[in-house]
Length: 434
Ligand SMILES: [Zn+2]
Image 1 (cartoon, helix red, strand yellow):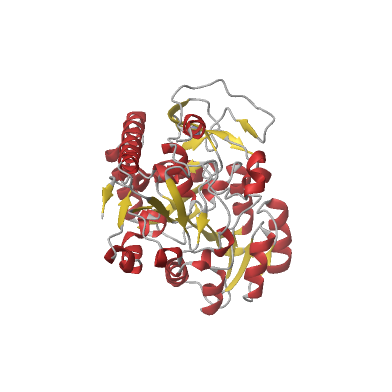
Image 2 (tube, rainbow, N blue to C red):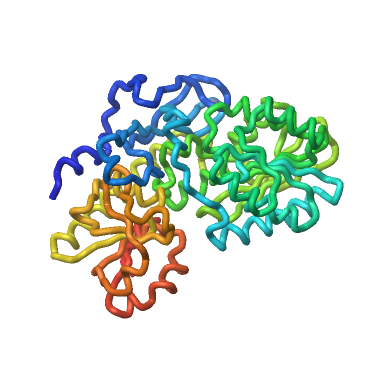
């Protein structure tokens, strides 16, 4: 067993003195939402590699790792990291295409139809989406007759949307870019941003850009991974550097309030193992009445304890316990001479492997459906990634299902492997064998 890998990557609970190391990250002192300094750390993963940094063998020596610690703001109740990996390092190799999965495509088609009905959009309306990815939401809006403009900083992804016939500005979303969009298309009836809120260090700059882009009576609609879902199903594998914030409606309402805005409708949606879709508007606009869903969710968050730091310390203890159980389960199978592989080379897999200290000496390989990952290795732990077809000829005793959020889909798909006697280890919410 390679002890070097294990010692290095099992998170230490000791807080080291961490300052700007000149290695592509810095520590910020203030909350991203309220700007306050009354922050308490409740979870410390130690140094971790970037979860999305699937790496080639020749780049192993250049690979960095960064502190991953999670804080609760006592003032506005936001949960966040404060150790900021520089943008250029963090998103340099961004490979996720939204439309690749059928589940996501269908989700956004439904999203466009719902927003059209809820906001009364028609052929004269303008929708502007930032972080528009490969056009996964722009395209459905266009298909139902609504003009949509996207803003996407990743050139390789923006070009995919353009090829699908979408209008995309290849840039970061800020006031300067908004000015140019307004000049060409006017102000927007709806601004939206999905799964991008967690990736933005300067929330206030983004909110100013949203306000500027929006008509006075327009709506700002967004989806974020939901903090309560993360806690309820112990999704510590969603916690990594790329995700700087973990949102509750409580903290989001605080943010909107700072900019004279408020949420007027919200719903929980199952995407990404639990998200919320929030509809917000300027407080001065009388166009959309605030629905009872807002008060209901805020009350539910209070009763769950999302406004109390004790809730998060309990969560952190449970996370360490689950990590230990999973690690022991896998290592005991290995000690019995079983062969173990992994399923789904996502950020979730990276976190589990690093946090449990599992390398290629324990996990033979990980199968994944994305061709651009073949021949690469998991960040930090360096487990090789191979094609799913490998399972047609090889039958490891166990596959750790890192994509546990797609459990039913995967079990159906890999029925042949199971019939040959192969078993899946499901890591969360509770480690189990199926
Ligand atoms: Zn705060």
